Each structure stands twice: as structure tokens, then as C-alpha cells.
Length: 250
Picture (cartoon, rainbow, N blue to C red):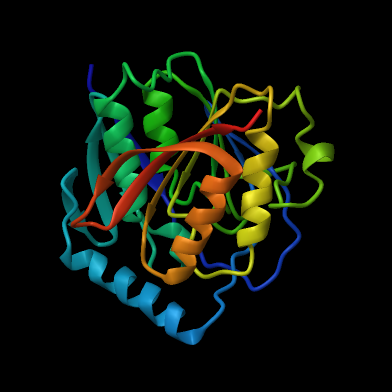
């Protein structure tokens, strides 16, 4: 059975906002806080990579036209419409790499009937693929990234986590994160959020995929590895992408 899935994302990030949360279809969507760049140089690096996306074809991409990328994962055609107005409305290489890994390593990472949380979901590609692989997915990101949804619950990195996502009523088998680490002001809050969902006794597995662009990415990786029991599932040297698996330290 082949099915076509289309996601439209043509929105802009706002500088500040009061996030609210909600749901859509079989995937629940919530929001997390705005990510702010720390330096103009880093901002230009990200902008350059975003502009270059139209000229660089990822292995699973079958078409790129008028802000549209087409993928084939888990026996389904997936069409994603992007916007270059915001980083969160673009598909970044870490998300594609993690999608490919999950599809090609289903015995190693079995998502069937698993509760999965994605943080920084962006276009929703990774959450869609996880859902197609059998997971029950909660996808979280900024309100403007998911502006076509109705929101009623917020996920603010590092804030009110126990109130909004109390343990153990919000316990997940897997937490997914792709390209959520780059120079922004919320890296400490991001790590705290990871620790909240992947805590001792939770049996939660965290899968983090990221393109390594900046020294701050490496520093975050060091802190990440000191916070959890970690292993590198795969590394793609040409794309400078690493995929980590992490569990809580007991």
C-alpha cells in the first residue's frame, strides 16, 4: 500500500511569544521556546546552509521544486513543503539521517506501538516517519512553526516540565531530536529537558542526530555524553552528522 502524505509549512518565526499546545491527526503537536542565535556569524552560517539546500540533493529526496521536497520512507511517499523564512520550516540533514537510520535499523530500534516524543520537530518529517514505523508520536515545536494547528499545551524547554509533563504520566519509550543543537540561547534548557524525559528509572531511550557545525555543538555533545550513558550509533563523515543513543545514568 502506497500513501501520499503532504505537510505544508509557510510560516515565520516571531521574536517572542506565549506558547500554547494542541493536536493534529494521529500525531499530537505541542510547542517549545524560540531559539535565538548568539552571534551574527553563526546566523550567517545557518543562512548559507539554508540557501544551499536547493542545490544539494539528499539521498532520499526525489524532488525539490518551489519549496517542496519529496521523500520515500516506510513504503510511503511523503511530500514536505518548506519555507526559507524560518529555520524551523526547513528540513535539515540530521532529520533525514535519523529517518534513514530508523527505517534501516528496525530490529535495533523497534518503534512499533512505542510512545515517542520528538523535540524540535520542525517540518514534522521525522515524526511522520516514526508514526509510519508504528510509533505513537508526540511532536513538539514553536507555535509559529505549527501555526495551522490549534494549541492548548506548551512545552517550554527547561520550564515547568514537572507541571506540564509530570512523571510518570508522561513517559516515553523514545525521545527523538534532530538538528536541535546549534548556537542558540537555550542549550542549557534543552539538556535539562532531555534529562527530564530520560531520567533514572524511566527506561526511556534518547536518539539525537546532529550535524556538527560549530565548536558549541561539540561542547554540548561533551555535556550530553557526561549526562547519560551514550553510544554513537552511526557517523556520516561526509555530512558531518552523528547519531547518538542515550539512556539515563542510574
